Image 1 (cartoon, rainbow, N blue to C red):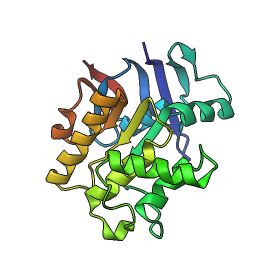
Image 2 (cartoon, rainbow, N blue to C red):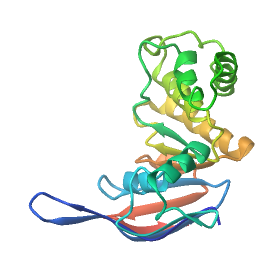
Image 3 (tube, rainbow, N blue to C red):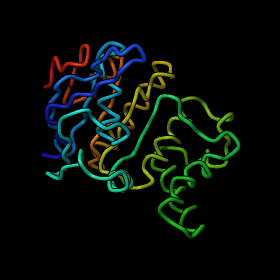
Length: 225
């Protein structure tokens, strides 16, 4: 057991008093080194599930466990420390700082872990080389293709040497050929570095990359295999 969600429910209350279940009694076990894809229509609870796994949202009820340690009842600071040590995030909209180079964008994340500027730069360069951007380190986001920008975002997600990458529609802004490149990179990180990938996607093609597939409908778990 690596990650385990037990009977997770997440509720939102509208201003008119209506209660909506974004997730309803969802139980999932994820083993270390798996590539997990989470699919479902818009509003099915995919991103909510991902954010709960990363501690960005708290469940209304149910338990979250990581290597047997309960996370659902820990303090915000403890959960923050867990994220810092274990989680890397890759989102659909790259979220790069436009006035920083690729190297500097990665250094922002590295600086949270290393105080000395020289090691920060060395680490950023190593990470950009890992994602195939050794010749684009001094380029600004506007000088990079969408696929290259997502590679920078992935390099940034690797800054803390995570055990898990949570990816929310990482190919949503990419054309099919660039999407395939990014998915191949994530698969390589999964297979060669042993990083567990948990990826939300609308794309049936992207979902094929997973060796474990979770499907949600209206906040309920329909399939987990």
